Length: 119
Image (tube, rainbow, N blue to C red; front, side, top):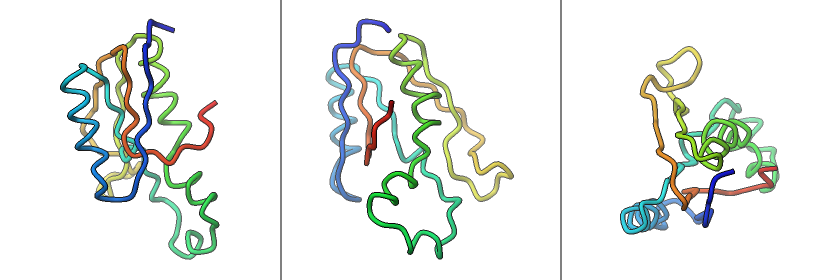
């Protein structure tokens, strides 16, 4: 790991201002922002989704392993993170064609998180 000073996760409902706050903090501190919505997993059928408890929905709505492996871990190692965000209906793999690159920083913000353990 590199000299990370702080990892912050912002949680809240849709439209609560998480992304606005993340952008403001990032502009002031030069923080790296991981947009967890980029890892939204929309592959679950609505019928299945409706049967899940709140905890199950929290665990399934974001592809946590992919977010951890492709974004968080590289940043924690002081490397840039690169990934293709979910979810594009026009792609056969469900990934957008644009590549997101996040430069490393001593401060990492997880924007829009309903976080189970990321271990």
